[in-house]
Image (tube, rainbow, N blue to C red; front, side, top):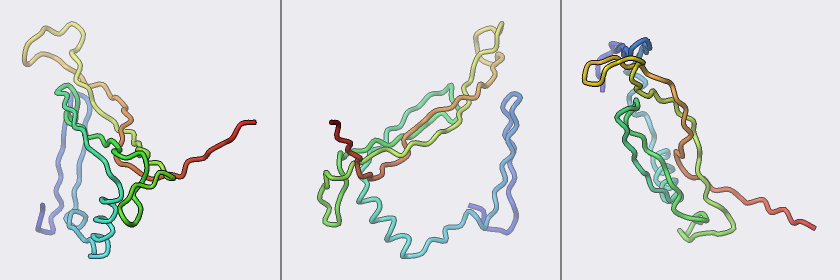
Length: 137
């Protein structure tokens, strides 16, 4: 964490892709209130989920975490599962860079690679929904 009032700049260069990163110290500091912390703790208990972590050295970033909902229903105020509600994943699209050997490049370390942009839809959390039931006649 940066503690001075200086801004931090970093440049990441990946073959032909250049990404500039700017971090401001004011944004990095934790400014949550006690009430927000209590809400977060309650929220954590209401949404039962498990994180699965995958690793692929040919991707940037190489490690991805994905949520998996553990309950079919949702927890009520007493911590009991309410099956009149459904627990559903919250999906988010992420962009990844895949390292690909360039055409005609020889195998071995230090040889030519390029990065291909990929999109992936991953579950980042779980939420409760009221199911819509349509009766057919």
